Length: 410
Picture 1 (cartoon, rainbow, N blue to C red):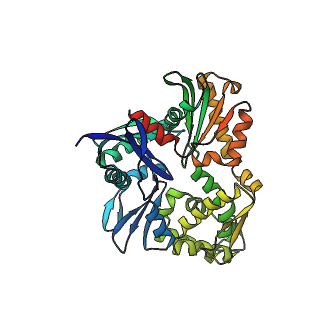
Picture 2 (cartoon, helix red, strand yellow):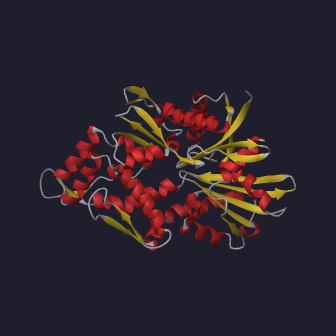
């Protein structure tokens, strides 16, 4: 059977795949009637099965006994990738975990298409780690190892915003200068391109490690963790003096990729010790309950849902999974305030992209938003102010990267 190339948009939050069919991009339904799969894994300790995507998310929501993992892409290039941990009676590292996810994508794509995919063209951020070149290079080495371990004999990589530019160029007039603003779950990536008669000319690409999971983390730190005792006072063992509760435990609990490692005996003992000396024990009791019942991902999903709701109108973060009637108010103004520093980093990265292309903002004709987080009102308004003469485009926000990757396989 002839081997084909599978394009894969392996995302922090969601993954898509596709291939060229009769000269046109064909997205694979890697879940029933759905061309995207949540980038989630659940190790079910009762059935001894590994669940992927929506099934993994459902297992978490229904409280099945096991280990849930999300934001796997954010671990690439870090020391955690090669640390072996015991899960379901085997010692495995994140190379193995991510390769199993990619192998599942390969298997489902082959089953849906009837084709054999030995080669892959994978999207990648411009920078996995924008402030550490060595870690950035290691991330690509790690990802390549994951693809090869998943059963692909060869894998090539393409910058995700450049793939999005390739998918969008046919909708624009020749000679248009466009800026791709691709804000995914873990990174923000930018490409300035010029449309030409036979395709596109890349003028500059740049990126920074800011994404939707960072938005969730900031909202959790600012609006959820104070309800668990962050910032509250802890009495010292002797005397009447107090000190603020240490931030580390709350910051880690608010970080998607660190949550699975928060349920250790050591962390639970630390939380119980804080509760024992807490000036406001009702708050720290929520922290110990979260760790005891392994609700960290539930709180992270609550932050994500609150973010989406507050992007449209004043809302609140539903925390009833932790305590009946518990909510954290989240107005649009509070959302903008919480995300201001992150949107400023995005704005600075677009300015650096302009500098790399030696262009002023006024020369950008089209502002093309890609990725779910690019549609946050605070992001759109910030970049529209930066590029006031550019025409915004949002129609292919969720498909541009995978469609561009598929086109590139041809």
